[in-house]
Image (tube, rainbow, N blue to C red; front, side):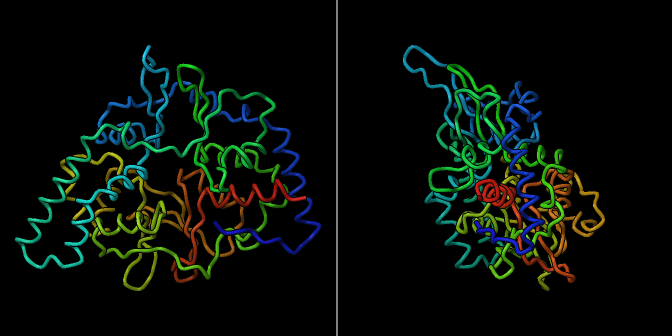
Length: 358
């Protein structure tokens, strides 16, 4: 993650930070509306197969769900982790069979016979993996809490509960008791809560994304082209350890976004889609999804992405992310070429630094 640099306008920043610090210290995690809304959780049994688990995520339009089992006399353990498309993707690409398929891609698939053979191998690998029990492949990108009270502040949530021991962002916390998961609070929930209380961010909301150093325009952005094979694009996600890549045309203009979540809902009838170009794959995904209403993103509506121009204000960034229900926004120049990307983790990491600054 990019370390946020100190801003230079002294008094204005200090006022904004002080206002936000006071708000974050006074407000409790219990003030987040989603905490109550999510008492009725979507959960997945550990013996559910991978394919069915991904279908559940897509059906309920969620990015993750707790993986559980019923406690027994032999074992009181009931929480096994979280199912999310990113974890499934990583486990899939750790397969030796998939590695062999990637070697086939590198060697070239130059005939109809070779293409047919590759598709058959790919389908075989995916079918075998999709039959695995989700309890075998679920992840642990979560902080477990036995209890939460009105003394658990938003500041503690951002600076401690959503960060692991190595300082990496964690995407969610799970509130549990002895027998069940009671609630999940995600990064998206926190961002939505902050946007609903934008006035408490003080002058921070009027700062530009460059003032806050939310992205590094000098750092190469991970992208693929519309002609990149979708299977290869997902391999890029895995090897680069990112949750999404920008999709650009031959001129480097941003036209879309491919993320882990695009694996949600995948079934045996759709494995062949991994052999499509990324552009064609996203058009199919778009037909099963929703568009964006913002004027700036009208040109991105075909391939699904959120973009903001250089110089955007922080408050406007939060609004667009919340209204469009996305996990990242690409920053584009006047030619619509991407110069950076801002994720929810980047935003919370920056705010965490502000909350712990003197």
